[in-house]
Image (cartoon, helix red, strand yellow):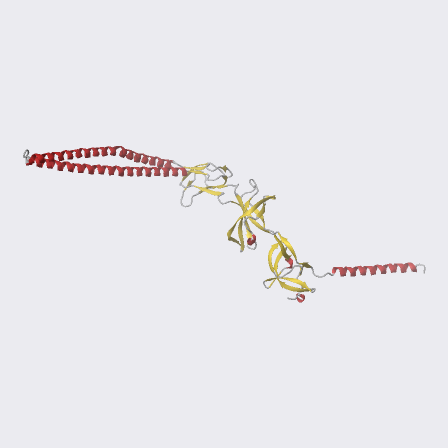
Length: 409
């Protein structure tokens, strides 16, 4: 009987603990039984970005494939892969014996043409002077014959001479006039021949000079020089090989100017409408993951690039930070293009948006009941999407779709 109060006390403590446990469990059940997750439509500022993958490429004109314009055997190759060349540096020399012989032949032809021209310029003026002298001589003879004929006519009238003497004077005048006409024609022909031979001689000299210049140009083609400053990227021809120049010039080396690089980023067709020239961009390459390079959008190719049924557009990024010594062609680049900020836009979380029957819809709580509402969406910024029409600020949208029986259209 003395131990009975202790037993009762223990039973009371156990009962009290059980009651407290039941109360705690019931409270926990009530606190965890919350309503559906919602979001109150509000306005946000969108600072969207476009992510793209691309590659480092040489700019237009920064990669040149140097070839031969004449055929021949490669005698000397002056460079190798990785060598830095200046514009005009010799890259290779082809055999030149036949080209030098052609230059000598053209030079001889020029000398002959110049000799003929010099002879014409020296001899024909002498012939012209002789013809002019003959004209002067026969002009004087005609004048003398005319005077003699007049004198014979006067003497015949006075019967101091015979009729035969008068006829002889007339004949001498006619002969002198014929000789004068002949010498004048000869002078004219000599002057014409002089002008024609000068014209022809000068033309022959010009033709010979052009042929000589062409042969010298052909000779210069045997020395292949670098058209730009850059680094030798590849060498495809070796010493001793014979190259044949045709419609496609055989490539000797490829020269790349590593100071003139760009990034070609492939942007998905969904995002290409947001990308504009001049927008800021940053990118990284796998070789230097901790280094971030800056740039700007310089151009957008109008033609799409379709790979595995995915449509992308080539966006050219002009690199604005120093990159020489870090970037090389064909490096893979992870590009981020920063779009212009758009303020005061109605936005909802992306997970609140649904696609049903080809339309964008959300579920709005109206009088504690979910109601389906069609919306028009615009820009997207990460996990947020702009609502252009269909919602108003303060509307409560469900973040999870309701059960079909509880939703009302």
